Image (tube, rainbow, N blue to C red; front, side, top):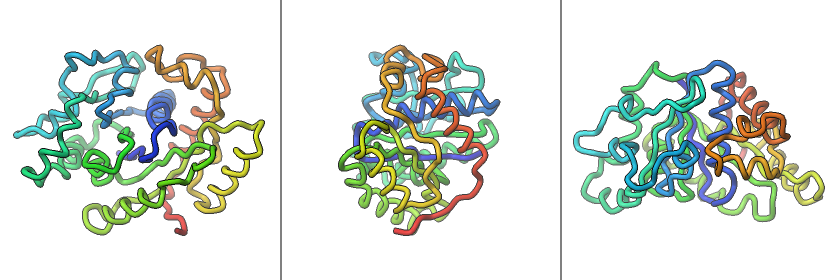
Length: 260
């Protein structure tokens, strides 16, 4: 069971879109995939048609006393092999609870440890912050996948995320590796996009996927219709790019660390 934390504290880089599309792509390859929405804004959950008010049981129950069993919180999507666990807005209150419940940082890791063998791939859709929920994802995951948009300030804030990854690896999860970077929102018409892609590849080397996700109206529209771009318009450039990225994930087994 491979577990990725899809993380970048910068908002608007395509974390949820990437989580949804890669999950759909991996399922299309015949794998059992679980997507876990850790963002209190619940964008991934809404893409699956989950009601916001009242929300069904989901991630919040993993932080209960006693915690719920993860298997009981999994919902089957309309895509064969693709399941999800929804988020709730009340997740935003966990930061305040953590002072009195120090074990909350390990809640997701404990839940996934009891879930071994039920899915082949698990993708954790992190919120745009480095708080308790993202730390939970980094503690529970074996790999980090960072979507980076090919725009100005693309690398802004990444240093803080990389420091957090190092801290988690040093103190809580020595298995954690920064294994994958995916370039998103690439506009081939601009020299800026090419320069950003070149800079990212020059800095991070072989962990950057060959597949690049183009800036596409179809990619942006799909979640509002409760679909990934692959089911929304499977012939679009964005869908084909995400399918190729999913194939790369499935067949790349080397977990490497870049030079910093």
